[in-house]
Length: 317
Image (cartoon, rainbow, N blue to C red; front, top):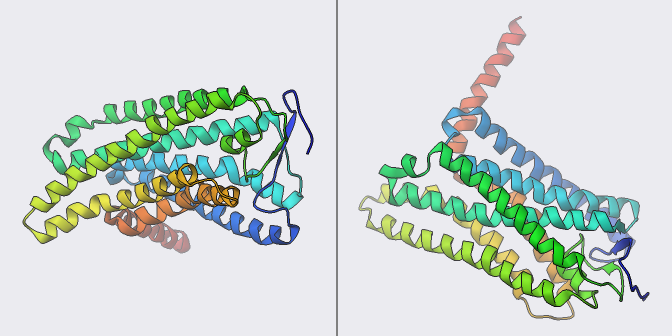
């Protein structure tokens, strides 16, 4: 293992295993997941843009969620595919911290966005008469701008302490991307400040949004149980069940990365759970919302006849 006493010019990314035999299989799996995730999220964004009936706060937030999901996967997967296909595991210092910045940006945005979507469902079910007053178009656009701005500032706040680390042990990162936690394991100085920032970050952008979302859904359930009609209860719960599933998937896998105790398999487990919330969840989110949401299904059916009609006109001409 080589020693480094100054800022390294490049890092060596070692994803999963250094066995070349598994690279084609892993490459194919990630290529399929990435393509499917991008395609599904682009379809969701296009559907919301084209259908006027989906221009409500809930679907504008969902449109942003799809954008964040594409940012997540695009930040990580293309570089990983390049590593697996070329066998070149080198990543420059600038590439490493640029990737880290955008990963933190996507993570912070998704944390705040999931909480905002939970609040949207709370207002829709608990205060339906004031929904359009509380969540007007102007308020929604201000919220979305504030979410991205706060996430950007938070990403800088997290990236700077990592830049100040001193790497004197090794430049090999046992992860599939330039992960801050993996970098801290090869750092010999400066990681105390980094961990302090991470704990503050986990509370502010992890625990607070999750607990606020939990409180919102607790109040939503209280209102749902007061509804006498069974059909009314089913309809009310169906409007927020998709988002609740997404929250549990995202926070469950993300928390596992930091809450699991240190073991000999920690490196592999960290990568598995990171893959789950950084690539698996972004791919599943559009499927969850499209399969469980009647409005999305109806929007697809409204657009399909238009396409079929256009095709028939072209054939006649």
